Amino acid sequence: MVFSSQVFLFYFLPVFLIGYFVLVWRGVRHSYLNLFITIFSYIFYGWMEPWLIVLMFSSTTIDYIAGRFISAEGASQRQRNIALTASIVANLSTLGFFKYYMFFMGGLNAILSKFGLDTFSIWNVILPVGISFYTFQSMSYTIDVWRGVAPPAKNLASFSCYVALFPQLVAGPIVRYNTVAEELATRKHSMDLFLKGITFFCIGFAKKILIANQVGVIADRVFASDAPGILNSWWGSVAYMFQIYFDFSAYSDMAVGLGLMIGFHFPRNFNGPYRSASITEFWARWHISLTTWLRDYLYIALGGNRVSPRRLYFNLFVVMFISGFWHGANWTFIAWGLYHAFFMIVERYNGKQAIYKKVPFVFQVLITQVIVLFGWVLFRANTIGEAFSMWKSLLGLMPVSAADPLLTAQIFTPLNCFFMIIALFYAISPWRAFEWCQKLSVRRISVALFLFVFACLVLFTQTYNPFLYFQF
Image (cartoon, rainbow, N blue to C red; front, top):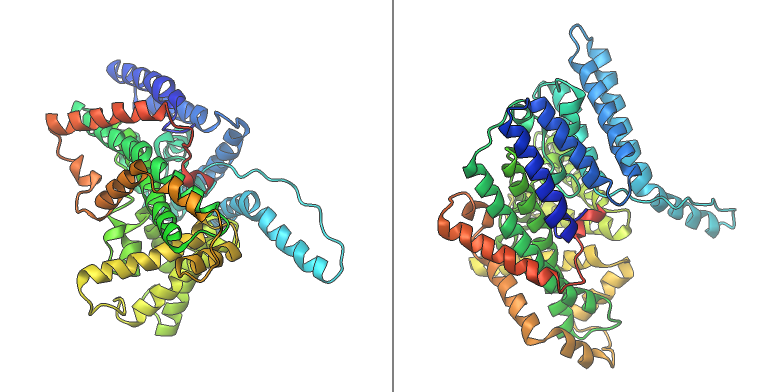
């Protein structure tokens, strides 16, 4: 189910909220509230593919049992290690099979065919929505319990609620168990929190419908073109740059808002990444929950900064490689991760500063975003070859298609230019929805509700409404 769908907005969410707050009003214990959330979360997740519920519940059960073994009184270190290993292997095996099986088998068959050997038949494996998010989230629980930085879940119902929480289930932010453990046991519900949640949700919904979907049409037309000219290439690449930011940050805003409505505080996931003056700063501002997850569970485990410079660069290489591969089973994602790894290593060698640090600040930001944009081309392309073709088009090194003037007429309409200007203004301005929604006023709530109603009206006219990060 999609947040920006009529089924969710006008059926699922109202029924859930009414039922939930009736239970709150009647003083039902939090364990039953958690069970209510879990049931609706499973409905949300299994709306189109009910079998996905079985997969997620299996992963949840394994990690819950592992957590009980790890935290059991009198458990030896060997037993705790075995339980942790079982959790990690189960999660990574599940993720590996559903997300990477076809990729690896395709690569193996390509190698075998080159040597004239028989190839394997490949099953058509469907990628479960959001599996990368909830496996990382569930796996972080057993690691934190093993480390002693998170309390063990008191019961399976509460832990199932944590894993399945529908607000952030399929596209994050990745929530650590220790950040919501107390709220699973007992949490406050207030009109102030509820209004904050509504404001967050409305702003995120408006960003998705009024900006991300609009500029996404431009990006799709340019990337579907055979040989766009230099102007159209830049216009389309910038449009995709805006689309992926506003699409993903909009989902995070809506997730935070939905969480606040029912008493949960989710972490911030974006902080103006297109205002960054270096690639290191960009990754401190972009998809913060994934960046911190990789830092805490991979980078530090590899030695972090407490190693020789060569090992430090290797650690950065591994982390960014995993970051790219986590996003998808395609060479383009791997190349995107390694592309960013190169700049991260260069900046670390330069004292965590960009090599263009001495130019005026505005040019530091501009250069950084051009680097990011070329990376997004890799991320968006279906193949490495397509990415190189687009790079050549951006540099004016590709022959231009005879149909390019028609493409220009399609993507440079007054309405498209208007939405691109709005996207640019919001992306580079110091105004951030996360701060804006913290201090409520009648005016701010009214603005948010107006944007929500207007976005709903626009939604009825749109046929283009994907969430890009659902594929991860």
